[in-house]
Image (cartoon, rainbow, N blue to C red; front, side):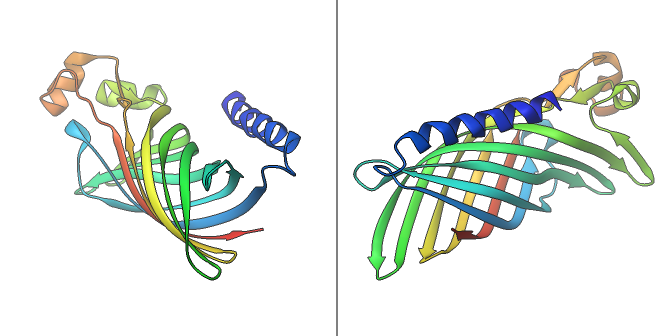
Length: 211
């Protein structure tokens, strides 16, 4: 709950800052939803898993057709292998710089890139009929490790704005190790690796609306 409040506070501060100069630097809000195709790197790498994302967007106009693109997303990510699956539900805060090209009347091409921070509000490790919370002591006892809630990384994307309708395609690459080893002997007995590591990677397609 504290982390969710921190995310909300960050958004509130952003809104306060941009509203000071709202008339000089237009601010645009929006909503979006879409699908994810996620996986993990290194020792956690499995098969890509389909998920979804929903969120609110905020575009803040900068000089020379540049924009600060941010907002708050709820994103279901993870990986799967055989009958095992990792589901991680994130609140994500991207902070991208974008450039918008006017390519036709009421049509713009958008290119953007930048960092993101994320916090997993929930997570499950599933193997057959077994389902374990990814962050509590149960998974630590069973596997010798648990997953880290915090993630950060970099992302890039391309989109098209058709007046108020927006279509976007993007990719996020995590830079934070998701594995928090608590008992290396147990981990090695199960996986054959004493100190496994893995990071998020997620491709997404979204459709949105600008107000």
